Each structure stands twice: as C-alpha cells, then as structure tokens.
View 1 (cartoon, rainbow, N blue to C red):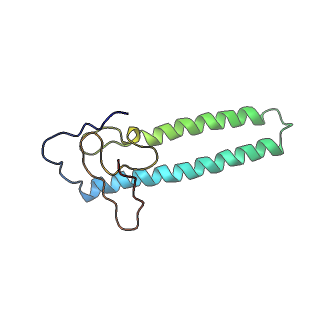
View 2: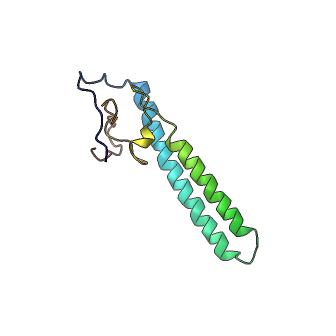
Amino acid sequence: MMKPRIPAGPPPKPLDETELARVLAWQRRMYVFYGVAMAAIAGGFYTVLRFQETAWIRPALALMLVALMAAGAYVQFRERCPRCQSLLGRQSRFVLAAKCKSCGVGFPRRDGEDHAPRA
C-alpha cells in the first residue's frame, strides 16, 4: 500500500465553509447513491425471481447493473480536493477520509456527522 505523500512544509490552510460544504455534500451523495443502488439491485433480483419465465428480464437486469456501476464510478470520482485537485474517490470508498492523502488538508466534520476512520 502506498504511503500518503504529504508535503513537509507548513500545514495547508483549512477549508472554508463553502469548500467544506461541497465536500460533505459529495459524501452525502455517495451514501444516498449506495442506498438507492442496493434497493434497485434487490428489486431487480426480486423481479427476476418473480418473472423468471419472461425472456427479457435477465438482460434488463444485466443492463441495470452495468448502468449502476457506471453511475457509481461517476459519482465517486467526480469530486476533487479543493486544495490540490486530487480525486477524493481514489483516496477512500464511500467515506470521506479525515484528511487529503495528497496535500494533508483536513476535512473536519460538523457535530453529529459520521467520522471516517483515521488514515
């Protein structure tokens, strides 16, 4: 596993409210997408079990799974660190890391929000 490459200089300037709100909104979208995707997959499999004699059901489920994977990749790799522009989705999966692994800027959580495991 690669070690984070945090610069040895002074710590980066903390995120302002707008930048932090954008990053936290990305994390919320990740959670919502995951929930919707799991419900869609469960519904698809239920449909296959219920209507298995219908010829178009299984190919439709396969297309739905491919579409969900593409949408998931788009949602995950869409957001970048406000400081160094590295992709946040490459640093952790579905959970915002405590800090950027490239530049070291922290992503503090507001009270009552989920905290990512420390990297």
